[in-house]
Length: 99
Image 1 (cartoon, one colour):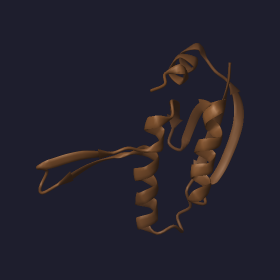
Image 2: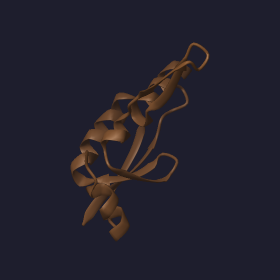
Image 3: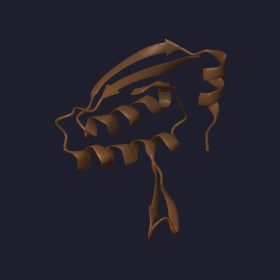
């Protein structure tokens, strides 16, 4: 089975607010308020898309999900590199898990 390796870089010239918003919407974030009294979770794109995270800013996704991830990254003017890769059996198992 084949998958897509996506390596990306969100440029530093983005302001901190844009970078934080990217992280919240891409990775998700735990949020607390009132001194930790209330807790909630802001869900991110990668919580909906089965993926394998290799290292920082490098993920492997199924071919079907690659366009969705790349389109999201383009919204934040990220530098994106996409390659086709052969999946290992453990990668196949991870990417088949769908909600």
